[in-house]
Amino acid sequence: MTASYPALRLRRTRSSPWSRRLHAETVLTPADLIWPLFISEGQGIEDPIASLPGVSRWSVDNIVARGREARDLGITCIALFPNTPPQLRTAAGEEALNPDNLMCRAIRALKDAVPEVGVLTDVALDPYTAHGHDGLLDADGYVLNDSTAEVLVGQALNQAAAGADIIAPSDMMDGRIGLIRDALEGAGHVNVQIMSYAAKYASGFYGPFRDAVGSRGLLKGDKKTYQMDSANAEEALREVALDLAEGADSVMVKPGLPYLDIILRVKTEFQVPVFAYQVSGEYAMIEAAVAAGAAERDAVVLETLMAFKRAGCSGVLTYHAAHAARLLRG
Ligand code: PBG
Image 1 (tube, helix red, strand yellow):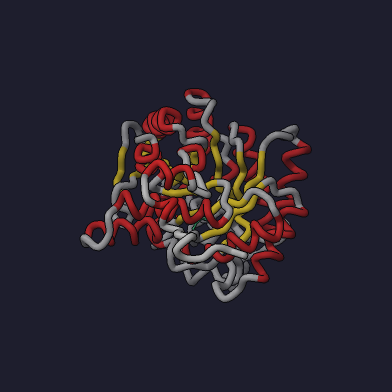
Image 2 (image 1 turned 60 degrees about the vertical axis):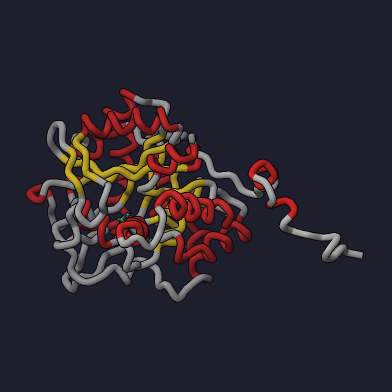
C-alpha cells in the first residue's frame, strides 16, 4: 500500500535548503555550458550587438581574453561565429575555405592560449555568402544540397586544420555528416568530433544572431527549404537517426525552450549526448523581460538552463554562459 497524506507529505523534503539540495534530481554546473562568441576583424574591439544586449563581437585578441575567462569560470567549450567583412562575402562563400579567415585565426589563437577549453566551430555558409543563405543557390534561389555539402566538407577540413575540436554543421543539408566524417578521417583528424545540428528548426528566434554575423540584411526569403518545420517531431527523430548513422558524436536541438519536447524524445529514443542551443531570440526575450521588470535575470537564467538538463541534455549553448557560470560558482 502506498502511503498517503498525512503520512506522505512531499513538502517534507523541500522544507530546508540542505534537503532540497540533497534531493535534487538534476545538477547544472559550468561544465555543462558552451559559450557562443562572435568574432570581428580589428584589434581591441568590443562591438556591442544592439538586438542582443550584453553580447558583443570581439576581435581575435579579445576572443583570447574570453577564452581565459571561460577557463577560469569552468566553462568547457566555446562556440565561434565570425562577422565576415562585407567585401569578402560572395555568392559561393569562398571565404569559408580561406585558411587565414577570421574563424581560423580565432581558432588558432584560442588553441594556442587556452588549449584546455574546447573550440566548437559552426559549419554553414551564411556568414560568408552575399545572399545570407547557408549554401549555394541555383538560378531560382533554391539552396542546392549536394554542391553545398561539398563546400561544407572543405569548410570543415579548413576549421579542423586550424585546430577546431568540435565541428558543428548547422546547415541542414542532407548527407553532410557522413561526407564530413569521411573527410576528417581521411585527413587524419580522427579525434575531431562532430556535433550535428540535427534537429534545427526554421525559427523566428534567430534574428539577433543574424544581426551579429551581419546576414540579416542580406538574407533573401527564409530558410524553410532546409531547416525544419516547427510542426514536426517525428521528422526530428529521423534527422537524428541519420546523423548518428553517418557518424555524429552528439546531436543538437535548436532552438531550445520551445523544443524541450524534441530534446526529451531524442534522448529517450537514442540515449546519445544531446545538446540544446538556447538561441539569440530566446536570450533577447529573457533580457527584454528583465528590462521590463517582468522577470529576475538570475532566477530565469538558471531555471531555463536547468530545464535543458532535466529534459536530458548533456549541455547547453547559451549566451548567458559566463553569467550563469558566475552564479553557479557562487
Ligand atoms: C547559421 C546559424 C544560425 C544560428 C546558428 N548557426 C542562424 C540561422 O540558421 O539562420 C542561430 C543561433 C542563434 O540564433 O543564436 N547556420
